[in-house]
Length: 127
Image 1 (cartoon, rainbow, N blue to C red):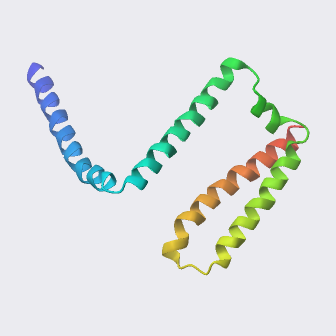
Image 2 (cartoon, one colour):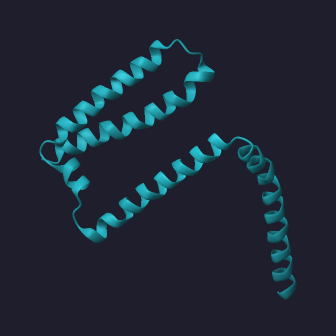
């Protein structure tokens, strides 16, 4: 049993070494472009802040933004957001970009549309 434990530890360390070596090139390329590095740090900080706000909602019971999206007028908020989403997706389609350039923004728009429509349904049914 002791041999299996030692073998498992060695295997885990070997895998960790391979993963760290594979990350070195990605980090070296990212450090070479400071704008990409700073934007990555900012986006990660914003995501962590959003996750923190969402995780703290149950402990605070009610928050301002949760009341805003669950109030009676939330359906109008989501309706306006959906209209804006339609405009943004139409603008993206009107650019005439190829699949390589339009793929990522269209995927992000698809996910945003799903959340907007689910929020609209939640606001309408929640009354």
